[in-house]
Image 1 (cartoon, rainbow, N blue to C red):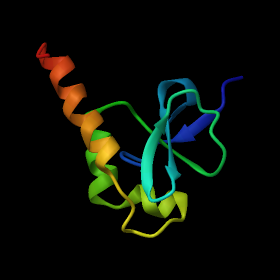
Image 2: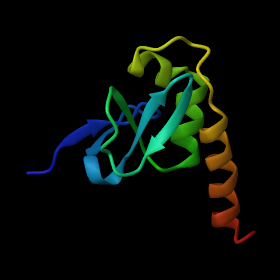
Image 3: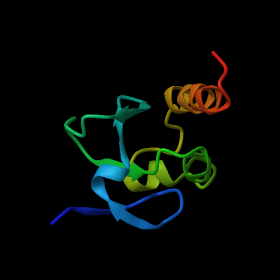
Length: 90
């Protein structure tokens, strides 16, 4: 039986393998694609809408129990590159 997690962006429950884990490393949020980094993790769908919702609502900081001033640069770079991949840009 697959583990079920809740997306912090849309709050929908989904199988673990359809979500990406996000962890706080120091003062920055990073994607844990292997889902093996130590510490608390937050789960999100690999969709721009879910990631943007989570960032707007400060859901990552709440779920990870870290200060609200956590760095989101890595995740925002991913959003930009993800949009380019979907649109066929380089």
